[in-house]
Length: 251
Image 1 (cartoon, helix red, strand yellow):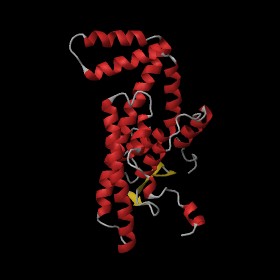
Image 2 (cartoon, helix red, strand yellow; image 1 turned 90 degrees about the vertical axis):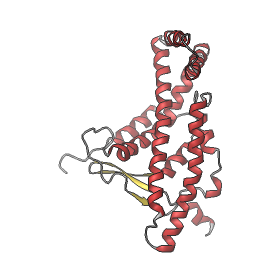
Image 3 (cartoon, helix red, strand yellow; image 1 turned 180 degrees about the vertical axis):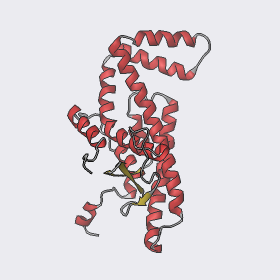
Image 4 (cartoon, rainbow, N blue to C red; image 1 turned 30 degrees about the horizontal axis):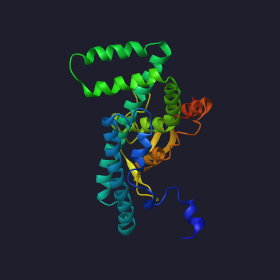
């Protein structure tokens, strides 16, 4: 393969994906790294990501060799969905905490929440609660951390939005944002011919919004540049409108 052909491959080669990269990217989110329980989840995701990346390439090799879907693809599908659920839950937890801190900072409730947690801590030592107390103290001491959280929420908005969309399809068999809807082929994935990951459809009724794979999610998180300027409000609004796309009324 010459250099021009290599440049057309939309995924980095396997040897470019190092153990610890995904963990480090997730732990760059403020108040995730200093929580040992959230950090442990990031470590777990990184470990399984390495395993699944190897499995994805194995499935791709077997597909080429056997010229049919290999049995290992069924195990890959099961594990890919479990990984997607796990990374969704970690980001959902972090996002909820970040938004709570911003809300409390905006409405003057940070000190009240801190006092409440400290009162509960007097009953018995609770390590998880102590972590939250220290985080709130940090924000009260340095209000600029609110801006840091706000920027980071903007950075992950698109990644998290796409992740949420496919998670609803896989777990609830619905279209995200439509509680009474029925998803198209939930859980069905096609083997990506570049990297072996399973491509799942992002759809909104009759509107096809593209595909997403476990590898896409992992690569997107690894590529986060939290020190750079986040996407603009208009860019994020455009993304949200795209994901809500509906077909014309006459279709």
